[in-house]
Image (cartoon, rainbow over the protein chains, first blue to last red):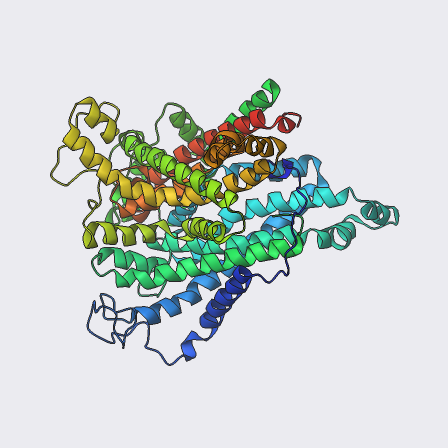
Length: 282
Length: 337
């Protein structure tokens, strides 16, 4: 609410193109990780679960990122880590966006008691520090990737409900909606055909930006020991193994860089997307 | 203005009750049976023991009754007993609060100051290489997992270079100063022990920088935007025309006005600091509430997790309230809503 109160500033300069260097870089990084996640099983690299060399070896020509405490290749495990990270984050974003925008749209369209009930639930859920709520839910459900994902959906849906409600409220007041209602369109038709198609822009931008944050929180939960369990190659739990073998810095270097690059990539992409979909901003 | 604050204040108890209700709901839907951790797996076969334990811990009562008792206990500050430390959760939290506050305040200072300087520089050299570098540096700060940057920096500065001490609030063999405020830096100064002050300060530097880095990104982005706004105004042009020095224009004329929206956002960064503190404390063996939460979650210590979650929610609510009120003061348009 506070952000929307700032007056929209007219653009003082025009970008030559939407494809700036950061956007291209972001697209390249995300594409790399998506392709990796989908095809890493086919790559001619080591097995992520096999002991392939002596344990705790520093980086070398055969093992670029060294080996971990069980003699497994760190680079291989980092590449395989993309799979659990990206699949989980996709699922979290998908369900959070679906549930959040469905409830937000209903709240905004219906108004009154339904609006109040949904939005108070949103307020309360947003009152928790995200990581604490996620930790509490995961601990209650029992550690594991699926439960961590459920916890993160619970953490993330309210943001989308709030966003969608605002969008629906704004679009609902437009004349074409009034015309549709006057023309005899029912509630469902008005909402789905005439309002929702105009609401997706900000949701899409937010989802792209949030993707990196979801990857971060997922890794944090695994780092704490609530997400992936060994021997699954997962970035957060790899870093927590690296923390135990603190003097062998290379064990956590790979997965850390992987997280950083994914988060940066999606941030760049989200920035570009918001410039493209909403040129007035930024 | 008063009406706005009153309206926000009235909503507070309801939000708090909501937080407690959700926490209660979560803790009563745990996968594991809490009875097992109380009486042990073997005794679960014995119906007499189970019945006695249920009566002793109130588990034979209906859910609404249990809820009423839970809320009633909370109002007296009773968060239950930790399964891990076997001490009252409230006592555990109180003991650990100063360590977290010391870290969070230091991080907030470090993050805000560097963020402001970075934002001013980025705005001054808008769209140049410096601007892009400053923004990238800030973005990396908010994109790096603190549990990783903490490890790497600890390795570089403590192991490889030896400039800063390892994890913990003090060296392992140092006796802490007499507890007055619980802030080791302040307590050591109050007791006049400069050696100890230096040691506690050196231990604080690295975790505060790691945690502050996440905040720096947000602050610098905001300062940059509002500085750009201010720098294009007439009175800046007038100041330059009068021949005021560049540094004076930037920090005396422009930053003063650009700071108004920034001050309010510092409360908002609290959310990042809580998240970061949980993980930073774990890496740096910092005996605060964050590492307590992690230990509790790892050991499935439900009363402790719920205690931390409720306290964290309360702190979060309060900081959001203060932020919004500060914002309403700074921006008159908000009061009208």
